[in-house]
Length: 382
Image (cartoon, rainbow, N blue to C red):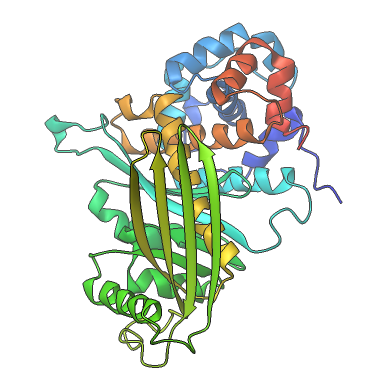
């Protein structure tokens, strides 16, 4: 059964819960008009206030078809000041409601994969005011291609404290959360399980005792000492980009004498992912990674979780290549956070459109063709 139908005219309704942060004497333009213009402009690759204003001037007639615009198109400063004042967490909740209504009923009702990772906006630093580059920790529903939340921090090292804040924004029930080794922390594991979700978290040398305990189990199993250890396997063999990738996934239940059981009671299984790459010249390279799991997943599902985590890294690549986010010089933190979220949401809308084209190609079509932009905004064809 389809969910509530989203139309261009209804987009503004998802932002009605937002409080207009402007002073009453500075409300020459409708609050919802400015927000909708900002969203549409970013989908059309105009991700800065100046570019958004220029796009809106060129599309004024189309915008008047569903916006009030009592005093015409808002200026660049008007758009900028609003995005500088709206609180990011409240802003994001409005978009999450939009997506929830746009998805068909039952989409994602089964266990979902949610990847969490951080990205630094490298040129957003401001040495004169002692600000380092902005670091954003975001969540991406990998199987649905949907941005589901983000938290901004001042430093990459703060990712550990940002992840628990981000988890509070997410619906974790029946979700499998994947995080790289930076998120291998007791508090994070506990919070995911407490929220009704499960985790697949990479383990590296930042947790040396845990990494050693997992490596010892895998080694004993390979040497035949753990015949009774319940385990599951999965493997894939793919060819592309001039190479062959063989991937082997192994999941084993935690044995009774697991050395880290006391400190990590949420771990119910451990996993290894091995990739052997054969290059065009015949040479081979290999990579072995360890994981802790809160559930004894099937080998196939474990493989999907590990491979699915690449989806958020691909999204970060798109942000830099398509939107040029890494070169963005926006220093005001709230403005930078809100613009970054708009880019992630634009990727969500563009990826869900069924047209066989690159994201950049779809953005150009949105810029040139309001009928296609209408389809993207309303998720037609999904």
